[in-house]
Amino acid sequence: MGKIQFLPLGIIAFPLTLGAQRYLQHAIAPGTPIASAVRLAMHGEIKLKGWYAFKAEEVICWGRGFVWRASVRVGWTFIRGGDGFVDGTGAMRWKLFGAIPIVSASGDDITRSAAGRVNIESIWLPSALYTTDGVWTGSDDTHFRGRFSAHGEPADISYAVDAEGRLRSVGMPRWGNPGNGPFQYVACGGTVEAERSFGGYTIPTRMRVGWHFGTDRFESEGEFFRVTIDDAVFR
Image (cartoon, rainbow, N blue to C red):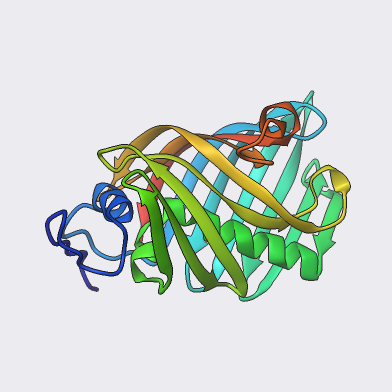
């Protein structure tokens, strides 16, 4: 397995902007083994008709996709299920009491939306950005964009970092249908409220995520996910 090696700041080690270099140098400690997958344990709140507590585990394998499995407490009962994108196919499956199907969705639109989710969630597997060919541009040292294609879906991701490279927000157009409207590209992203280091990787560990990111609609109707990462194991 290879190891991440960086040149000092100011020396371009690969075709990235200075902001992108700072971000990756902060996110991946020198000498850290290059990971192709991460297993995340998390909890938080998810917005259905109201906000409900959840616990979940997610595996992101950059070469294949992701699987997110959650248990959501709704009143006195639980809804169990999750989302996934594996080998080019996306799906959603949710069951009441873990047995009675209440949501089952698949097809091209679900697959495209799930593929977009893998791409933006590379913030939890930053080594994927280091090894993915793309075009990186930046308006200044703390704002940059990465454009690449992965999992059959184009990614045009905007990042905001501080002077030390800590991630502050991330967003991109993602295929989806918020509010059960027609499927289309909608701004999706989130703000980072905390971070932690696990095995040489520093990743966001508390975030607010939703549709219409970067607009007034994010606060009023777009936010649907508040998450805290409890553990991360990289492979």
